[in-house]
Image (cartoon, rainbow, N blue to C red; front, side, top):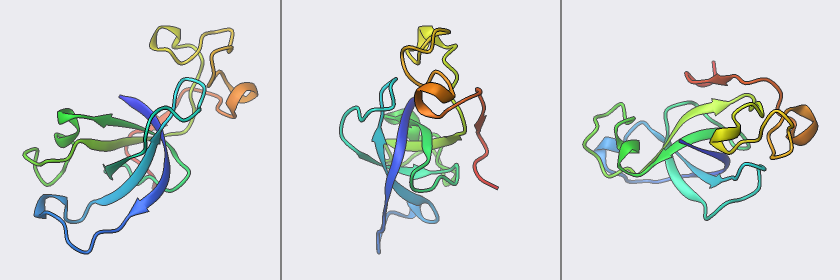
Amino acid sequence: MKLGRVIGRVVCTQKMECLEGLKLLLVQPVDENGKDAGVALVAFDVARAGEGDLVFFEAGKEAAQANPNGWFNPADAAILGVVDAVDGGAKSAGYGGADKSAGYGGAKSAGYGGATARPGGRK
């Protein structure tokens, strides 16, 4: 999974049946410091994310498996959760360490304390 920030919506008047009922969002991947990392991509949303939210997403063939309309579809990016906070304790995953020097290390570095996420999305 990867971190990204929702930067916009994608509106389609026509789309494949397997994407019906799914919101399409524009996601900017971010690095361990919260800075843009790569080009924005379109992802379907199963987590009820909104513009400006920090999210975790999957890209590639695995993303299609998250589609509630069936896994056999051409989707290659899916938003799986809205991130409430990222703690710097996951040093091996590349998101900072206990010293909080590599980004997302708590409220002081990027405004994210704690280590919780809402896998079920917004209520």
